[in-house]
Image 1 (cartoon, rainbow, N blue to C red):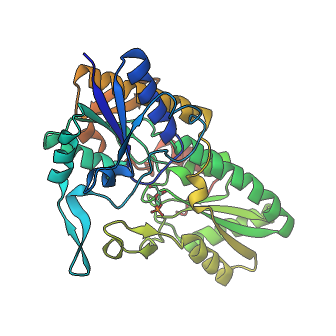
Image 2: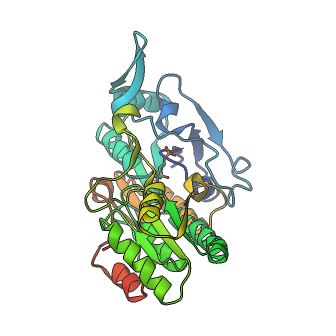
Length: 362
Ligand code: F6P
């Protein structure tokens, strides 16, 4: 039976979003003869005046290698807590019923929601209110449970690894300590895996509160072994053992979304107080989220998009596509959201790093 489905991308963008959109559109149109509607700017496109356009084979031509999302996105548009202007003030309101009503008026059978923890929680909430949705796990942070990996993460690790390779040569020339801040929110995956791939000397992650004195001791010990420079990779959520993470903008001041930042500058300053080395801090920021997806992410995103269409065909709603081993499967969205997938401080990856001689701040 012919269907009309819709797709939106929510939360922070990441490489591979366009590949998912293309996968959904091609699997829906070429194999099933369905119609696909793109919703603009995440859930924002379903609040107030509905903003959508039809997605055709032509509209997704050439987008597989393109970063970003042709649909636009927003990480501030949670319909269950939506910013609305009232008497000159911004207040948060539950507009989820408007979203469900607008969706129904569009005459669409099902919605593919591509997003991270926050966006998928919204999808699940809407699903419970009668909007049939399936989820696709996106985030460079790799902090979603239920899937071996999220798409976008592999690309981000590649970007950071290349940056670490570049920073090595300049750190070595000047005998400096370079402290590199990477994204990941409360998860240390990007720092840990890019740190291993990029041969970092110290990796600081949120899951292991760090001792700055021990970090400095390890830099000194490396110096004694002949290493005149050091590379420290600090996840933005990393925190000293007697302090908290560095919050640039609090959730209260940013419509419920906390913005982290500043740990590299802090670590740099503390090393400078204790050692004679010249130190520099580098914040890689949104470079990690931009640009073309890696081949791994192009393939994973395409497989996720195709699987999402298959789930809709079967009427399997409230599910999220997930990579399990080498297979793409479906799990309940509830399994993926609620708590985060974090690096195990005593797991194989952390032990591997330490056996390689990488200092983890403890
Ligand atoms: O969740 C993805 C992410 O890039 C985090 O790693 C980072 O903390 C955050 O988004 C940055 O968000 P924004 O784009 O709002 O600055």
